[in-house]
Length: 221
Ligand SMILES: *Cc1c(COP(=O)(O)O)cnc(C)c1O
Image 1: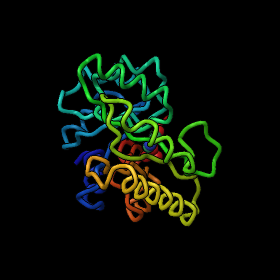
Image 2 (image 1 turned 90 degrees about the horizontal axis):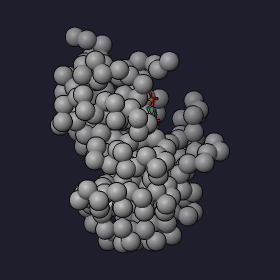
Image 3 (image 1 turned 30 degrees about the horizontal axis):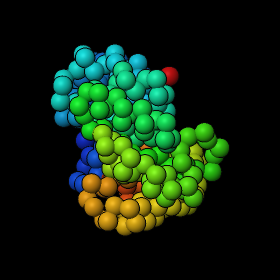
């Protein structure tokens, strides 16, 4: 068995069946992605618009592309026809642009709202305290955009208690938003949390979607 096929099956066997594995293929070349595809992987994650544009036309059409990185509004138009799910939406400006571009091609774009749960300073993600009002202001305003859940990244640390606590914070925020704004509607259903180093903890705290790169493809340069 190839290393990639082997790594994929080890991860898939170790996670619950209702947790989706997004294989984060950023920086990796086409033959590597093809190898994962041939092993049965269909969901891939990229964090640069240009990489999606370079890779999509050269790989099978049944791949579901996840955009997981910071997305500049000006890049939305280029990638909107390829994206199955955009995980990293954290501004009104970005949702408005996604909605406009989705409408132009007759699509409803599924998105996740990125929430800032880590201790590290970051420009990205809505602070937990501001999440409710952000959702209230956006959920019905954009007909071609559907908010299907939340995404978060934990602090980069070996301290598992810190990481688990941050994931629990995201799960709690998810539950609150689901009951307050989505009437427990099943379309708001995803919690994208967990990477190579912490996906086991994330699943314990309720993740429905893990984004794993280096544990499948090896470390990036
Ligand atoms: C790169 C990246 C990942 C995957 O990281 P690994 O540690 O290689 O599994 C997950 N999520 C986001 C947002 C990323 O940018």
